[in-house]
Image (cartoon, rainbow, N blue to C red; front, side, top):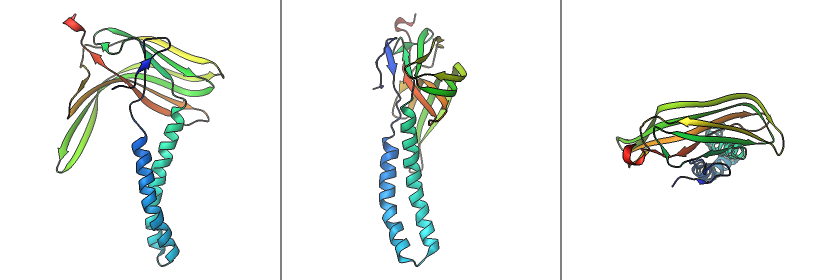
Length: 206
């Protein structure tokens, strides 16, 4: 189920679909396993090379955890992305509104609608997923946006959807529509997130 909710201006507010939970869990488990090993090796004082080697594994876990924390922090400044129809109809316009709340000093903010295909397959005993862009539709690209506390910066536009392909989900293949918004923020972690919606043929083919 898509993370949608009732919008404030348009019918639906879209949410991000990618969870940070897997990175947080991996970081906690990995660091919890490698850190005691590092302490034991370092305390033994027998091998500097061994201490450095195990320390690199600890740094991997800490790096993944730090990256997840920065992304969580960046999400506290995410804009509100709303559309007037969910699912939207292919071949028809859909109203889009993107609202960035203040305070924020935005060096650059961009938004693009996209359609992406994900294919999952087996390579030997490994399960792999590859993704490819089907199309990308630029919405806006603004620089030097300063938003005061309690203020809102709003972009409203009509997005003309093409005739296809439609949203689709199966075990080994998925077609995904969404709106990607990325921003460079002064004094705050930058964000780059996607807000997914469904795009389907109009009933009756009209």
